[in-house]
Amino acid sequence: MSVYSRTLRYFRPFVWPTIFGLLAMLAAVGLNLLKPWPFKFLIGGILHAQHAEPPAASALGDWFASLPPPLMVLWICLGLVFISLAWGVVNLISNYLFIKTGLKALLKLRTDIYSCLQTLPLYFHDSRRSADSSFRVAYDSQSIQTIYNKGFATILSSILTLVGAMGFMLAINWKLTLASFAVLPAVYLALRYFAERIRRESTQIQERESDVLAVAQEGLSSIRLVHAFGRENFEVRQFFSRASRSLEANLKFNITSVTSALVIGTLMAAGTALMYYVGARQVLAGQLRLDDLVLFSGYLVMLYQPLEQLSYTAWALEGAAAGMTRCFEVLDREPETRDEPGAKDLGEVKGDIAYRGVAFSYSADRAILRGIDLRIEPGETVAFVGGTGAGKSTLLSLLLRFYEPNAGQVLVDGQDIKHVTKKSLRAQIGMVLQDTLLFSTTVRENIAYGRPGASDAEIIEAAKRGQAYDFIMDLPKGFDSLVGERGGHLSVGQRQRIGIARAFLKDAPILLLDEPTSALDPTTESAIMGTIEELMRGRTTLIVTHRIATVHQIGRIAVLKNGMIVEFGPGPELLRRGGVYAELYKAGQYDNA
Image 1 (cartoon, rainbow, N blue to C red):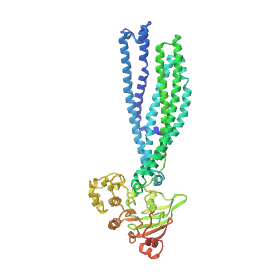
Image 2 (image 1 turned 60 degrees about the vertical axis):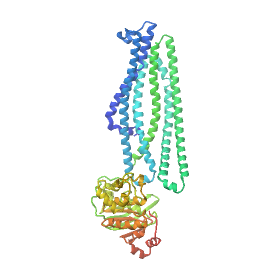
Image 3 (image 1 turned 120 degrees about the vertical axis):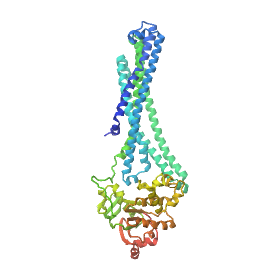
Image 4 (image 1 turned 90 degrees about the vertical axis):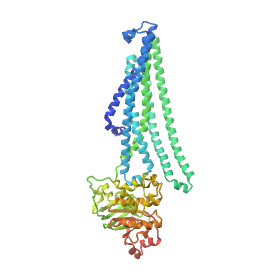
């Protein structure tokens, strides 16, 4: 299915506005075709009548022919104004309906792309820049308006005008019509040649504009790091380099557009000159009336204008097709972690978790997990420790179904999570990430993100239990204070405590903690660990942390190395064994996966 036919499917819900728009367009085309006639009547029926016997009665009607010439001129001029006004009103209605329909389709497309991006697996987002996805949602999606408003509507209007103009031209003088058509084959070949170049160059522009957005977004989002390392000039050079490549692509595209306009315009000028040459000779030979030549020239403009408009439309469509292709690249991606047919709700759970023969890899040449077998009882706490890349955080991601295992099963209360809906699974899991992500809204809405219907009292209680209440009340508007983009108005520790308060509020039976205290100073960490232990009480808890001292006496510890669990048991017991855990404990620190 072509990109154009797929695009037009987005307009199926808007059939009636399109039909009304088409009716208004038909009326506008009809009125436009009447515009040359007042000039014919003025020249042939009035001005010519001053020097010859007029055919005014037959051409203009007995009543009109009986009027004094100045009054006849006035009526013809008023008629020209009326036709132009009526055309303008009907054209306005048509454009309004088409533009409104195009904007509604744009809204639907943008929502579909954003919705699709939300459902795609994490490795899809990890493998590409977020700025590229944002560019497709914000800018590439606008191509649907170009295809509908400048494509469908313009092409149809131009074709109707062409057919009408050709009909009148053939009725006036077929020889002049053939002379006017002499340049059309050359125009067609030029259109084809430039259309291919413009599509290719439009795609290049969109890719390079996406690069510019990516560099700007990365540089501005990391502004503290840039300033800290004094890399401002480097970032400006990076931006200038990408922006220069975009400039080159835009310049190349515009040169092609201008060149194409020059070629098409010259060909049409040649056709017009040929028509006037043949027409003038016919007038001189008495084979054609002057007013008919004027009328014919008016329709020739109507013939060439739509042709020129179609050429520009063809080039705009090529650029729009490139943008829509980038949109469909996202929409055609299948979420690898979508719910399978017949998936059921997990329901309330006790918190029994099991990994059975789980293997996972992000790529075929590098295994992350190998044959993981682990059983976690309801209410039990298990900490995962190990070196960088050992697979600790990946185990949490598999439980959340951010990824699917390549082999084996992950079970919750004896149910393979592959057979339950992701929504019902994640409803039973609370979590605190290593880097707490906040949205640029209020503190209240960020705490309640996992439970939007929570009452103010519940939000306040969660903030108190997460040791966040005091600093929240010191903010200018308390719980209604805006946290800024990505929580930029708060310190790292404050953001982390809001994340912990969020987990308190959700009150799920399974709790995942990924470096929950990594951003806290030792004093705050010591104070909040007691609160976290309270949160863990009665819940199945999985912790990933590099601070072994915080989990040494809590539950059991799974030590990962090279994607396998090499030791498992209580911290003191593992320390006595003198193995991998003992080495990590003595070192006192290690990297998180």
